Every structure is written in C-alpha cells, then in structure tokens.
Image (cartoon, rainbow, N blue to C red; front, side, top):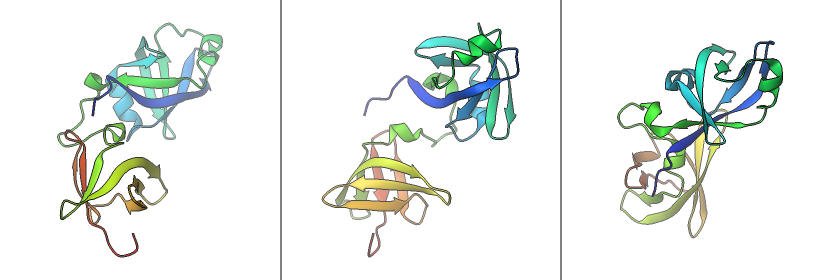
Length: 162
C-alpha cells in the first residue's frame, strides 16, 4: 500500500476572534500533535502555524497570511493536512488511513477480508472488515492481535458471533 505524503488532520470549523485565528477540529489523537507539526496544508498550499493553543478539544491557530477575520472566514470548512514527515509518530504507531484496505487475517493465517472502514464510536474504535461476510471487530487488544501497517496485514482473534 502506497502511503500518501499528506495526511488529513482536521477541518477548519470557524473563526476565533477578530485577528484571523481559526478553530480547527482535529482528527488526530490530540491537538498537540497538530500543533507540533509547525505547518499545515490547505488544498496543497503550505501555511506556517504562527501560534496555536488548545481550547476545548479544538486547536485555535494563527496561520501565516491570515491576518483578519475575513481571511479566516474564507477558510471555513477547509480540510487541514499535515506532512507525514512532520508528524514524528512514536515507534509502532501508524495513521488509520495507512491501514484502510489492509488484509485482515485470523490467528491461523486465514484471510477474513479487508479493512474497509474504522468507526469512531464513543466507547472505542470498531473495524469494519469486508470479506465473504462483514465483520465488526472492536479495536482492542483482545481482538486485534497485531497490526503491521508497513506490510498492510492485521491479525485478529475472532469469536463466535463476530
């Protein structure tokens, strides 16, 4: 599976104040990860993050070239991307988009299907695996035995009724 150089990291949902700050709904594990990147991409155009702070689960950011509320308003509903190289993930971590389409196998090595979607539910993530039948597998260690994002293989433990 080919990895994309830009990762969807969030969406600008509104302006904040009158000085051109934007409120970003962050799709990463935390707003801090987006803040540490130091730059974002809007439609492929690089914008430096001049300042940023977390506020109620959002990132409030001042972006390069966005000096007033009008300029910030023009960015509303735009997807924010980061460069994969800027993310600096911990060893063994991966982006969910890197495992979409991965081959899902059970503990004996038999193919279950392909990871089609990841549902973000209140209690936990759930993997939607499509093969001969569709499986909904909670993304917890009891069921997800190994994730090899590099080779695109996820090993799962299935139980009756899954």
